Length: 183
Image (cartoon, rainbow, N blue to C red; front, side):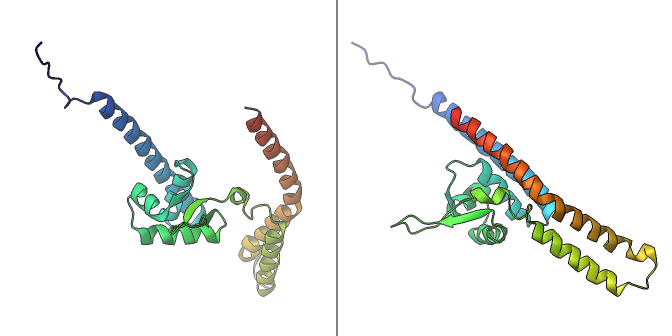
């Protein structure tokens, strides 16, 4: 019986899986870059902090070590550590370490979505600050006072409306969570 040699150098099935895997990583990195730009422009985050936040929303597994994140984002561990500190200060990510583990895992903070955006006290403080500035400009022309007047008025408006908006959001969020549990 003749021996048939099989060409094992053409591992197309495995190549196909690698290509699919690479496409997912490429899509994740593209998304992370888009998130990075958004958070730089809208919130003044560092580009790496924005990229990290974007990446953590789509990565698998959801908890990653600093080394894993650095490899995925093609960044240094020190850059990732700095970005984590920025996001921790905004309560957007948390570090955890399982018993017996030697490295921290980083993940999104489930409570971080709401952040301080609904905190009416922050807007009240901002209104007080604006009025303090207005007191310094009490004899200034109306055009000079306009920015601070509008800041005070907007801050008062947001402080007044935030509790109702937070209740409305919690109702919508709870419905979303209930629908997710059913599926």
